[in-house]
Image (cartoon, rainbow, N blue to C red):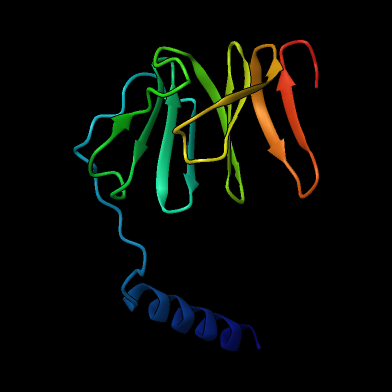
Length: 131
């Protein structure tokens, strides 16, 4: 019985190693600035938050553009979350939400937001002083 299990395991490993991987990774030549604190997919766009603000890629990371709308371009982004059409940004100055992919922002909470949790009915921001 042990030899049958070993034989099956060897066949399984050989079969898996001969399969070409479906996921392919490549190094992006684009430059995302600074110490990245948050990365999220919202719709078909990628968003990166760091100490210089929020940047977005609309072409799978080939190019990046800083978002300089109502959100200060030099605001330190610490957290990102997405739910439906809403994009949430946690910064050292508070919690912001955008309903239009970052074109406009509304301040909805104060404090240095470290993390964001969005459920079906509520949004929680975890700050240095509590939830």
